[in-house]
Length: 115
Length: 115
Length: 115
Figure 1 (cartoon, one colour):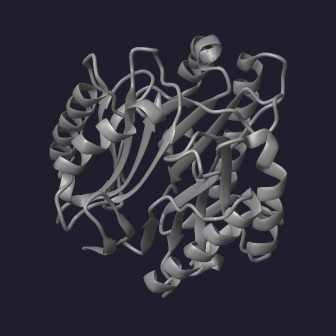
Figure 2 (cartoon, helix red, strand yellow; figure 1 turned 90 degrees about the vertical axis):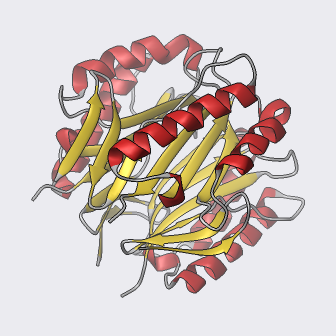
């Protein structure tokens, strides 16, 4: 049984299956990578709550940065303050240009549903 | 129990486990990104059918474009016509050069097995 | 129930849930992509063993190369010798700059837990 939320014509923001939730790649608004990461992770929080999960239940996070050299440290600072200590996910971060040049960071989250 | 199909020396095209199917990254042939996306998604259809799934059961799709600025709109046009409305997956799209310069698009699909 | 191992302040190296294990993106040391790939895959072996899995139980591998044109063949040579024939995973490989310029290859592994 698959459950989808915020299902648009191109993608769903939330897809639940077999105790696991897959989020669409999340981006954020703001002029700096720090602002965008904060906004993006706030969106992740909101979607995970709606899916019956939360940031302590993230299994895997893949992070894309448009300019890794420039923005890696600033993204990590926001990330490190956000991830719950003792419950950090498997993570990978690499450089990839994103859907529009305004976007500096995108996070792809797979999480466990609580219960 | 893991079930693999089209198992070559480097990778399997289909790997099934625990109600979920993982496809190898699919590319397509053709001179334009539209042709390649169509060919690639036709291959996804074929593999999903063989795996006991289909395009309405995709959980997550990660799309890599070799030239995102140039090809994002054309890829999306093919994608939007292909994804079944009401059943769109979680999706992320970013830029990455691919295995050969001829390839313009690659799609990495995780889907639920029908049941 | 989620089980995490090697849980640092930023990420866990191993996250287990529902019969599946997610590893953090693994990199390796060495001057060439061949050395780094060997070192990286040895690390994957070690983590999978600790998680109750092994290289014959990998479901999906996503490989990032910092310079795909230059390093694809050399990475594949090491990969092809390492993957157990008859049990190769779904795989995708693309180009992405990595966390530091020294890193030439990163592998993101999802595997089944033996049982």
